[in-house]
Amino acid sequence: MTMTALGEPCVLLKLGEIILKGRNREVFEQRLRANIKFALKDYQIDIRQRHGVVALFLPEGTGVEIAEAVAARVSEVPGIVLVHLAWRVAKDPSVVTKAALELVRDTPEVARRARFAVRSRRRDKRFPLRSSELDRLVGGELHDAYGLPVDLSHPELTVSIEVDRDEVFLYTNGRPGQGGLPVGSSGRGLVLMSGGIDSPVAAYRMMRRGLRVDFLHFSGIPFTTSESIYKAYALVRRLDAFQGRSRLWVVPFGKAQQSIRASGQDRLAMIAQRRLMLKTAAEVARRHKASALITGDSLGQVSSQTMANIVAQESAVDLPILRPLIGLDKSEVIAEARRIGTLEISELPDEDCCTLLAARNPELAAKIEDLKLIERRLDAEELASQLADSIQAYKLDA
Image 1 (spheres, rainbow, N blue to C red):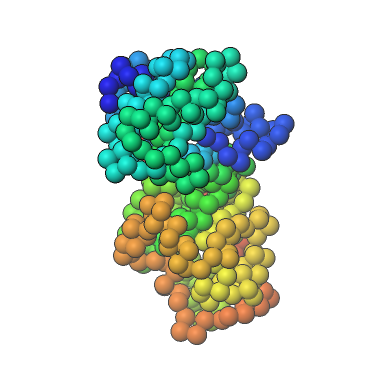
Image 2 (image 1 turned 135 degrees about the vertical axis):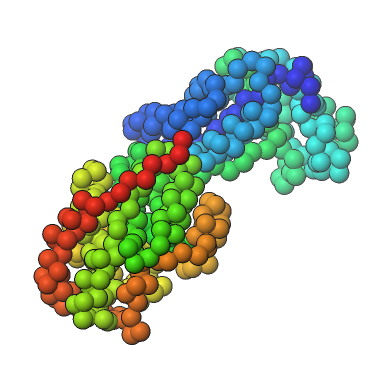
């Protein structure tokens, strides 16, 4: 590719759900632009938006490698459906045609004579050719130059042309974005972050719905090592790519677990522990202005996630508990964890604090009154407040 024929590289971002927001659309778009700016803080970027398309312009003379890095980074920002590495050329049909020939010349599709189509969109109606005319002009030149067969129904190669106000954009492919809504457009939540596979996926799903999340990890310290903390930190580092400015707090939970075990209610110990975690998380959420708790529960996956036990846990706090994985099976969760890059971290060995109270025959239908009796013995409300006082903050590396 020669810079002379193709003009300057840029990145085009296509929006999805945001464009359906009616009178509130500008609020979502402003949030998205702020998130893009933060995600690309290490680059010099000029952000412009027109007609549901966000264009990222790079300084003149920027190489394609930088543009590709920008495209890869911004593809992790929720609220964007498609990310295209594009080329800006002058609004002249002959220039557009030459650029299109140059754009596809060295592609694998040309080498194997792939079926192709040209798709034009003329947002600026002052351009001398209608979209269909531009399609025929550029498509004819590509067919004559490279012998590519035209297939308008199922092309293997699509050359896209967008005629905008000041320039024409050309591109041939794109990478999928995260979709959803911009982080921060739906409020703030607190994720109960274990070191397992489920809770990171639950966090991601809520970020994708516009919720900014913080993370609370319960460690078995002093009766376990710090391995689970390292895992939680690594998971939050990965998830931070989707929202930025993530916060991780760790609760030293081992002594509280010892108190639960001493209550003598072995079959109820796990649910009692989960209720205490929720009470502690609710207190932390109140202090940091989070409006909901998020867990990785999936109905029926383990004994603590039977319908009866979920209801028993739900009654522990007044805050809403969001469970975005509730209807998924494990294979679906694993597939999503692999896609977002958390699976490999989650599969690392560690000492999960929950194993300290694992019963041989756990209760599948805990009664709330029995759990409240345990909590009165423990003075659970005061204990949750003390645990919230004891949290340690872990700052992510810049």
